[in-house]
Image 1 (cartoon, rainbow, N blue to C red):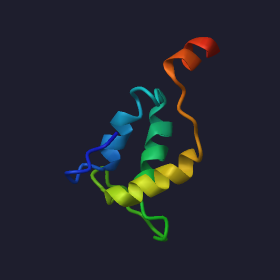
Image 2: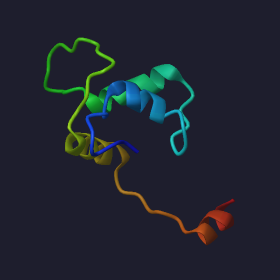
Image 3: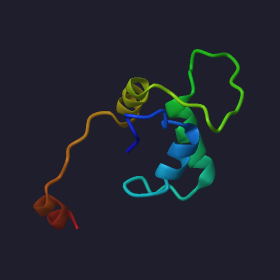
Length: 83
């Protein structure tokens, strides 16, 4: 989903990534809110908008896990059955 080797975990990158599969969020405002949620420090009282703001990979993973919660991956056969 994002680059763990470089400091590319920016709000701008997440806005772009969430438009593609598996997210497919077409609405720009919703993508931007998700990106802000993943990257911005929620302990700050005031946050100045910065599209290039980045966050540590481990923090982003932790926030994303909290957002998604528990999930089950389906096999190819399960996916065909569901459809």
